Length: 94
Image (cartoon, rainbow, N blue to C red; front, side):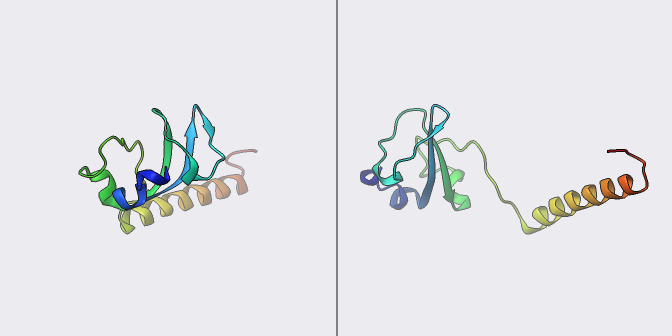
């Protein structure tokens, strides 16, 4: 991995590598990539926008605008509070 210059080429950092469903415990820099390896990568938005990611297929992107994140957080908090209220007034029973 170290010889691939992944960080310099993709402007991204590999946090973990899984192979056949198991996490590779070696230091990331010492790992030799195999076809089908799954990488947990920390990168900028542009990483998955195409261009420099040849040979790498993003399967999940996280993040979003601050407004989206705030809205999602508000919904989760609202649902949890509604469940607590419903349990308190015995609309639902645990």
